[in-house]
Length: 451
Ligand code: EPZ
Image (cartoon, rainbow, N blue to C red):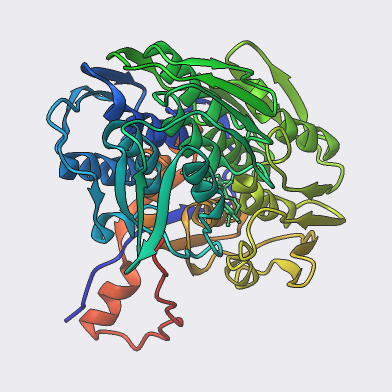
């Protein structure tokens, strides 16, 4: 019998996308904001919380600490952390979601202590925590790693303010330092911080709860600690990575699509690259339209901290560039193992050469990709395989839908809004194999590492 039936995504290629769809709330803003609710003295109501697996893991983690959560509507969640009594986040949950580490800062702010399983590595490469630990120590904590857990404990009743300079702008460390500092005793200055929109959204949420934070949007943030933070109602920003993914889905089919309920400024670096490829881009206050009737060529991309080109759109960009005429070069500067999906693109006929020493992909556009059974190793690589499948001749069956569902709320519905023929199905290949009716050449399965 089959050990498990994969639910797969089946993508019909060759269909030109047109029309409009809307982006949902940002995964990478919702996760830290949910963690920040641990600091609220009263209930928190969040709007535009995407219904994705990563949110349900954070939900379970907060419940395991004693918080009470419930849906008030399709994407509205209330969080009551008045009964939170634990400061220990178990490995069983943290292993499923690196962003679980975002609870360290709030637990330190609330209890002066946190015991959180280390996120460890993931399929993208190492997920170090040295910058997080640098901040916790500066704010007055003893920090040690014990049996796979980070144990942080304040040496005084409350954390105290500090002047902290990061060697690089880390999204995670910036978030955790902010979350620990907002209720510290005194002023904290954070230098060389990440300026991603999701970090700004977290800071705006904390400010709405009564925190005092200045310098947002610059590389230096100044926080005046307050004694307590109150409950609040707040709307999460749109997901810029979902927005960019949908744009790449549209242009890879040479389509004409409009993405609504988004923030064009959050994907400016992406729009610039699409324009370089000859794509017509128009924007309004909360919408972007791309018309890819005549693509003139590829481009060069270097991923970088915001406002640079986002690493989370690197795989989707490479998938699109596989179909653009000429040669493109994509350099990944954030993660040291973010090209593993290229092997799957090659099985669809893509011509991509990856140099490990320079962490760079050289992409030669091909006339036609061909549909194939493929496997997604992580969230954004899964999205890249959807992009490629939309352009390919024939059908592409994508295993690893559980990764895509971690970051995209019903991606197949957004694509069907645009005329895409994308549907979930129980793995046909597995069913055929299980039936034993036909000899099938089972393609090599790579067991996907934990995301
Ligand atoms: C966030 O991860 C996002 N995740 C990632 O999105 C995104 O790719 C990344 O930022 C970069 O933009 C969430 O927000 C939940 P980092 P995070 O701290 O916080 C090194 C997705 O698909 N580093 O900026 O882990 C680290 O090893 C995900 O939605 C240290 O060396 O990003 C990595 O190479 C994938 N020491 C790089 O910095 C530290 O203490 C980026 O890490 C911390 C990080």
